[in-house]
Length: 99
Image 1: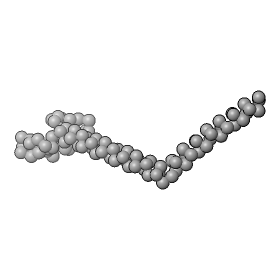
Image 2: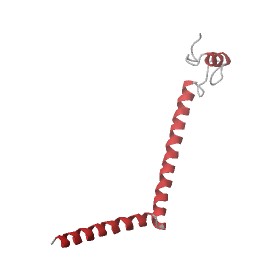
Image 3: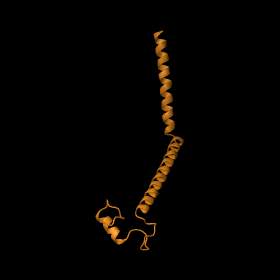
Image 4: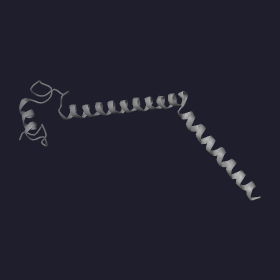
């Protein structure tokens, strides 16, 4: 009876090992590699789109903070020379500060 139990345990372990090895072999087959690379391409494309969206949002923030799209009283868009000089000296100050 003990030998029968060990034969069943051995057969079960053998079946499990063969199934796991065949699954791993499928991953490294040409079709499995193509599937994995297809998923990688989608992930890279999505990452690039996220980066571009973040860059566009940050550019809009900077343009509105520096008033590059608004017309200034002197008729020029963006910073005047004095404001740019103040901002260069003290980057923590606002470009609108007259100090």
